[in-house]
Image 1: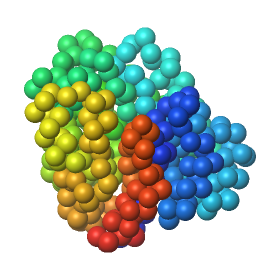
Image 2: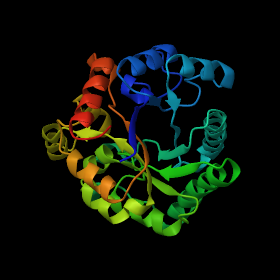
Image 3: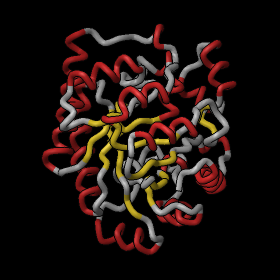
Length: 297
């Protein structure tokens, strides 16, 4: 089994490059290595230095390999596409400079979707014209990443965006060519959306190119669904928990990957709210130790 485990700056609460609550990029690299990881994601473009020499030296100093990067932008907003394209090119250039392979596309949180996170039956839907334009924006950035930069591009479903629930993800997969768009599968977001991560993996494992490991606290999930709590408040209540403490069956996830002879990296994402006084280093270490305890190397 040639699967390696990395981590990501979001495990340190880094979601947006300009957030003044962020730790420094040097702190994230140092602490990621201290927690026992050999790989890390880029984080939001602009958080880590875009000068390849500066970042390359720091990665080498901590014996870390850059694995991939995420374009977390408002694909659902046609007026934001210039920003999407800017983030796509900047992220892809950074990945290419350091030999990283995975470009991950995520539709960011929408005010129209955040109130109904986890509740597919209540979520507002795009009409046909809006969907087609949305799909084409995703497909264009996938084409840029795969054809112009030679990267492996994966779509990542995310709570509170318009690429959230399993039917939406499968519709996109049916409409965009597999040669330019794979799947970056996030176990926790799939569970939060109300679907079975393992069942989805079994059905689509041949198209999964990259994994994000995240877990969901079932008690918090049940409470926020019952009370119709929005996404931001659910995060504040700790819906994302340490791996192995939630409802994602990681031994079964591992078995699906084993059966498919999956090769490469899987990245831990212990999303945390800086206002909850998290312990990112401790959580990163616990998550790595848990994965090792069930057979991941």
